[in-house]
Image (cartoon, rainbow, N blue to C red; front, side, top):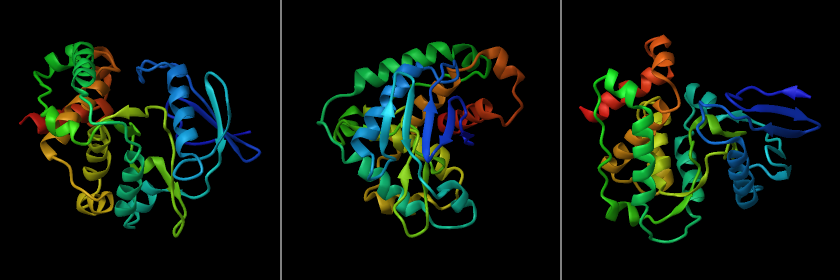
Amino acid sequence: MKKLEGGFVNNVYLENGVVIKSFTNDTLVGISSTERALNEKRALRIFGGTIAPRLISSNDTAVHQEFVEGELYEARARRGENVFEESGSILAQIHNFYRSKCSLAFYYEKRFQKAFNLAGPILRTERLSPVFNVCWTTVSELGSRYVHGDFWLGNLIGKPGEKPRVIDWEFSGMGSPYEDFAIADLWIFREFTNSSHKFWAGYGKKPDQEIVDSFLVLRCIEFLATTTLENYSLEEAGGFYHNKVTVLRTLLS
């Protein structure tokens, strides 16, 4: 059994050509291991064999899935390869799983309030007063769709000339596509200059940027909600959590 790289919280191993992903509870995540395993299993049943690895077997806290050969798209992008248009196209395929034009306001406003309360000590220390102002009429036009929850180039893997697979579906489920747009803005567009227009060309449509920014405020606060003021104070400037504060300042300025 070989331990694979990239498991920030979970333990991921390769055994006889099968990836074994064992989900562990951690305050850095904020969602139980059982729920995250269920999210991943559900997504692999829907997308496995097309844009995700095939599900082989599972239990309450572990998922056995197909091993995908290739290279992470993040590494390819850092070498200067244009993987952005294809990445946008893949996200569009995820979002094609559509439920209805329903209101998601209560769900996301409740998430914001919970994260705001948990991150309160850090926000007060940094003198930040974020709000979550969203035009829900515009959000509802896209309806409730399947969202990945952590869509960035480090979760796309494949070989040149072959269709990539999306991994790490533990935060997936039904929601607003703007949630994925916000993560793409955070981890792709802010990392790779001039990548956004190529990404949206692949996706097929550029969303409302003000709403993307509002959802990015939500996600940054949710990240901050997973640590304590003490741990935040011990982190180096430019670290994971300090970076989210920097992004928040930019969004709120």
